[in-house]
Image (cartoon, rainbow, N blue to C red; front, top):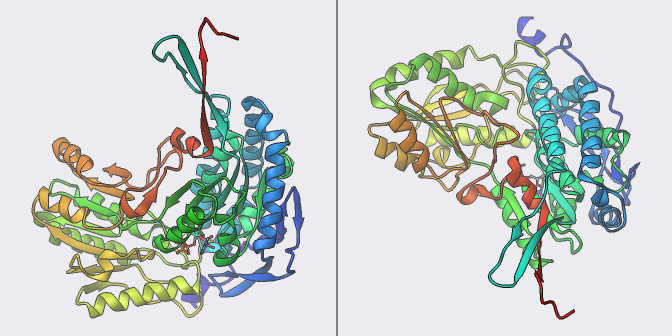
Length: 499
Ligand code: ADP
């Protein structure tokens, strides 16, 4: 039948699974316990592979390797330009293998193959090359001081870094974390999310081929409360960079505080507002709103999950948005016609469906969607609620799915208040042709990135991170380098030194 063909075998590009073990000190090894865990294809609800399950003992071994590589290995001692060459080589190897890597993220996370290949992985290698270019431009300042002394600052690599990353963008989050820390001269242990370990292990293999020395980059797949917690509480990890939920971010920060007070940076999701003013092009704005929430099936920390539309255009906007949502194609993420693949795992599917039920119970109007699609795989219809009140759960919680809460506003003041009426502060979007409106809005919204007449547009040089409970610290941009650097001040008399 027609409907089964889009879920059938015609677009199957099942890559061979070559790497399923922990990558420690330059080798693929079994976990100490010998345990493995299943990674599931969300399109088919079938096991793709069994992956070695790292735990505390494995993290300890990985940290020892990273410590050794930091204390006596070549990486932190190489000239920045030499680190850059190796990082550039790694990026080239990723390019050469991009189809296989794109397919791995598709079967592991349900992400669109085409987008992985032309957008996400290219953005990831772009970040790798950006930081490669920065590796020989890391320098301190010369300070005049008062009187007969002067000082200079040295920027030193912070040491052994722990990275804990989520499953919604396995390739991009991998390189956003790894690239600046490598450029800084750090060594590291990274735990990919248990849902999506496959591409990270392939990247490790390519890192070795590129010449990244053993022990510099260690990858330990495993679960959060075991392997993840072993990173955040480790006494010999010097800094942790985390992307994930508020609940886990809190645990990471607490573990860091109670162990060795390692600095932590947290990127903890959002409930981002997209605000559309009366002067907007309704057709284009409704397209942007749909794209802003349905892309990557809503599993994006900056998803525009709250859409506020000014009252004059509200009715027409709603009509267009619903029309477009109804023709948004949900299907096999290998099919080039699909715009939305399956949610990453069963937990996500169930969590999203329960939020949809909540929305209905709380009295929001379900304009379209709300159901699963097909009888196999974690597919959900693009879902739009109207008559949403700001105190409803669907307007407050990060759903991390294709569920949009549509709201109406009258004045700019009201829009500012509503936009900021959230514990989160990661991103926001504004659609208007009026420069005064755009300027006032972008300065009034408490969020780490504001998009004016666009959405999702990120660049390696554009800092990315949260206000409020969306976390602190920035990924990307030159700012991110400083998470992985220490500042040392050296002070000396200019003359009349008694020695
Ligand atoms: P999400 O809600 O997006 O799944 P999580 O915050 O649960 O995000 O997970 C993000 C990452 O944090 C994953 O790699 C996960 O394994 C890890 N993690 C989960 N619990 C802990 C924990 N207690 N300590 C450290 N890391 C954890």
